[in-house]
Image (tube, rainbow, N blue to C red; front, side, top):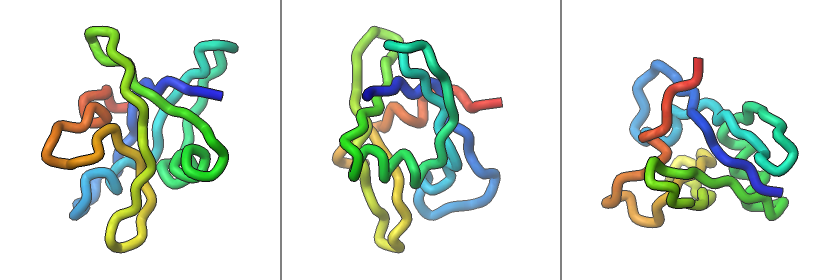
Amino acid sequence: MAVRILCIKTDAGLHENPYIAIDSLEWVNERINVKGMTERAKLYDWIKNSEGEAYIIDEYGNKTTLIPAVCPKGNKYVKTVKDESEQDQLFALPESA
């Protein structure tokens, strides 16, 4: 199963890693038109351990798949880039209401 990430919901606190500020991600399964909201760590587990796929479609129609990652403190998160020197498209998504 694959889901398209529509927006992110962030925590207002300060974080060393901006990915950890993301509490949850809103998604849609476009094949069956079902929407949902999933916590960051649960989405990580689904991608890493259950062969789930999550992706973002940018304004040009390009599809970018999310990849699982773990920060040095052990927090699980997802991102669209392997190297943080590039801009992550996840942060270009709108904030969930």
